[in-house]
Length: 99
Image (cartoon, rainbow, N blue to C red; front, side):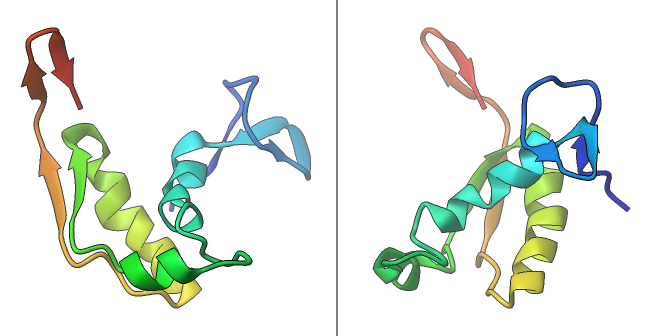
């Protein structure tokens, strides 16, 4: 089970049945991959062209969301999974590290 709402944040998508809760950011954020490509919109040309992704590169702290929960969401939508998910450590750059 995965709780998809939180009471510890004051920002987020409100849960209609319980105004004390908001939807947890990672559940909402995962769908950006497909909605940014036009999934379920007026023009889905990019979605048809680029989905499923050949590779998704994610930081090590979000591997669980991208390899467990994201595939569950895609399966529920009847969509194909990304072909490869690559979890990496920190990208080191001269001004610091980035995930």
